[in-house]
Length: 101
Length: 101
Image (cartoon, rainbow over all chains, first blue to last red; front, side, top):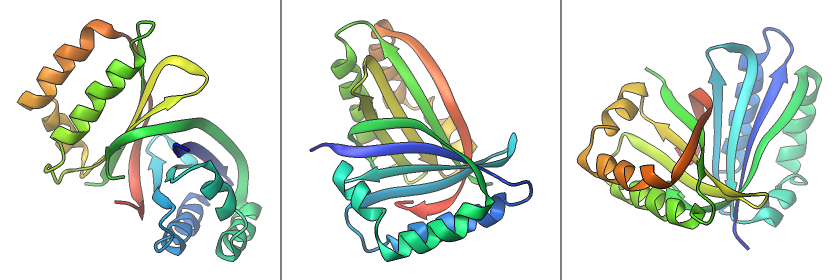
């Protein structure tokens, strides 16, 4: 199976962007020792005060699926859910290679 | 200055996707020792046979700008140009943190 990348956008309640970014950074930290998760990058956009973007690269699609049922992930999802107003999967990709993976 | 991420899509002439992916992987390899380039990931999409996606994270926006005038980058751009039919900057982001950077 190929490496699997996702690029997604979360929209949050006004003023909650930094809180969601912090929760997602905790998610990234919780996957520090999870080798199947190669990349989990949290970003914001100057022009969109209520959006947080995440780019993830996983060893394969199954590894990403499995991560959703981890205790740490579920706890973070339950904390983030009340402030999230929208989620958009911008791209689902098969990663060929590159620097940093 | 913040870390700077870009997500972009190249469209290529029919049948040239793998060639462009190879050129972009060479670009990634040429930046192996360039610390300012933290991430340069090349991906394709199952549903878009003529597209190649690149996600990049740089130490800052200036570092990305500087990279465009590197000899290696210019050579690769000149090789890729004839087969590229379109370029779309999907997102320009300020990266907060995460795993892999």
